[in-house]
Amino acid sequence: MPKHSVLLAASAIVFALAQGVGAQEMTYGQAEFLNSCAVCHGTSGEGDGPLADELVKRPTDLTRLAEKNGGEFPYFRVFATIDGRFVVPGHGERDMPVWGRQFLEEDAITFGPSGGEIVTEERIHQLAGYIESLQK
Image (cartoon, rainbow, N blue to C red; front, side, top):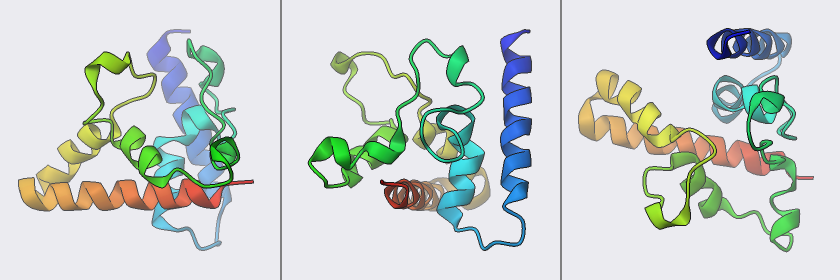
């Protein structure tokens, strides 16, 4: 199956799972996670999304970040990883999309360059906060 077909199929699966949340209240961070992250990290954040086996490197289990950091959730490291626009090139290749750039492209269209940056940062804060809530 071509990669774009796999991505479309995986996205459809994640969307269907998100719809299964149904009448429950969903935070913006959870909605963003299901829309942008679950296809690789899984709906529970354990690294078992529909595309996980298609990737060269298995996605990180996001539910264990605090555990792997001495019991403290590494909020700003998570924020910087999601954003990705300010990664030092000498630190190697990224395994995941640069969401800050992708979000900003969308947000700048709607809110202009300055407003787009503010909305993009808030989207990433909401997403990082939701990932913090997934910790075991």
